[in-house]
Amino acid sequence: MTSPQHHDIVVIGAGIAGATIANELLERGQAVCVVDAASLPASACSRHAYAIAHPHVGRGAPRLLRLTRIAFLMAEARWSKVWNQHGIFQPSKKDKLFNRNEVAGYLQSLNLDEGTAQALYAEEAIQVCGIQQDGIWLPRGASLNLSAATNDALKTHPRLTCCWNTSVARLEKTSAGWKLFNHQDESIMTAGKVIIAAALETKQLAASMDVRLPLRPVRGQLSIFAVAENTAWASLLPKTAISGDGYCLPAKRLPDGSYQWIVGSSFDEGEFDLQDWDLSDNFNREQAKGLLDYARGDVSLLHKSGSFVGVRCVAGDRLPIIGALTQRPGIFLATALGSRGVLWSALAAKLITAQVLGDDFALLARLGFAADLVAALAPARFFAGALAAAPALGALASNSKPILPSAPKAR
Image (cartoon, rainbow, N blue to C red; front, side, top):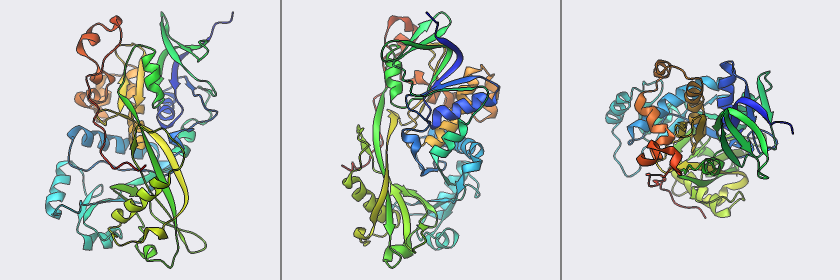
């Protein structure tokens, strides 16, 4: 019987996370094998052509703020070739008084200069970016075609092997590393180190190693609307992206004079359905009114011309799970990217590559990683202390109660 082929490093998953990590390892001179159940890269959520990227500037978790700043800079540098920088405007909450000086001081406290984030009153915002609302202007904000970025990261390379139409059902520890099995329980290959970047499928693969992860699906639907040029909406359509309760991309004028406008996204926790939902489109129409502060807008004039539906993967604490699975040596995870796949995949590429190659922590520090940030992302944050001390005893329990983003369901 022929022994299964051995690879030093195997990446399971050819979405934006797996592709970016593989690309980083290739740039560091490593040979990499990428395995995916689909026949090509970016077959699931990474088919998304309308992702946006900006640092988080809201109030709240300091670690999230610090992490998204680091990740944004990494994403901006990594995808400069496909980085569509049009700026992103973040409107102020309508129920709160907006004080520009106070907000500007807050942005400075986050070490965000005016080239990255500016507090603007509505009369200033209309001049700077064409949005007549109080809020924060993020001039370096951009959109990105995840599919194009994923395919570019996995372009032909002499040290890259891609195994398509290859589904991994479980992993088993061996003396030399790990053995990968398919759903027929046949050995596919062996690997010294395995990086699992397979979104929700990470949960099943982790379970095959007696590790439980608090991962949940969240369905999201983007709506592509056609807007006639003679409607009131046409004069209000944005020339930049807006990110608030939902988000939208800049409107695109078509040859016939009408506009294409992409608005999203619905948020349906626990849903896997990839079919279009009319109720999600209606939800996004209401989001559109809010984004433009156009309460009297006639949503019947937003005619659906297309959509994108994806199922995101989230963890209980809203942060991604990125790093070494220390209780299972040789296993690394990059999952729970949620709606920030552009940012977290760029960050995961740097962090996991450093861990796989055993880089000195000083290198991570130079990239902006502090020890508390690495710990905030690590899979170990979910594990019970007793099992962490004795991982051979069995399943690793989760101490984390899921805290998922609150939003109306569009069903």
